[in-house]
Length: 154
Image (cartoon, rainbow, N blue to C red):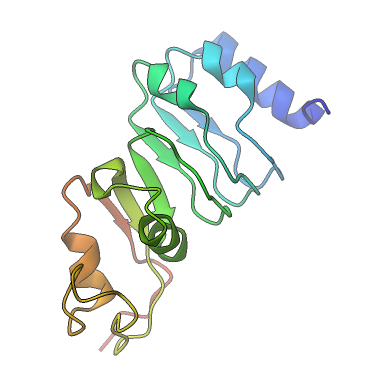
C-alpha cells in the first residue's frame, strides 16, 4: 500500500525546501515512510497522532535528527532510536516491557491529575510516593516536557 498523496507531497516539499522540520502528525501512518530516510537535513520529525507501532532502525542514520515526536501512537518497539518524545502511557508501557531505555527519551507529554501518584510502578524503579512529574524529571536526557494539557492554576 502506497503513501497517501498528502504525505507524499509533504515529504517531497520538505526534500526540495530542505526544511529542518517535517510535520506528519495526524496522517494515519502505520509506519514511518521509507522516503524520510533520504532527508539527511532533517532535525525534527513530528509523527504524533498516527498509528505507528514500530520504528525503523534507519532513523538512527539521519545525521541531524534531534527530535522525534511520537505522542499518541501505539508504539510497541523503538529499537535503538533515540531523541524520542512520547506520551506518558507509551513511555511507561515501552519501559515496563523492556523495550525502551530512559536514555532514549528526550521529551514527555504528560497528562495527570494534580494529586495522582504512580503506585503501579515497581518500587525498584521509583518510590510509590513520587509523582509523574518527579519521574519525568529524573529521565537523564529529558530536554522537553509538555504539560500544556494540564490545569496548573492554583
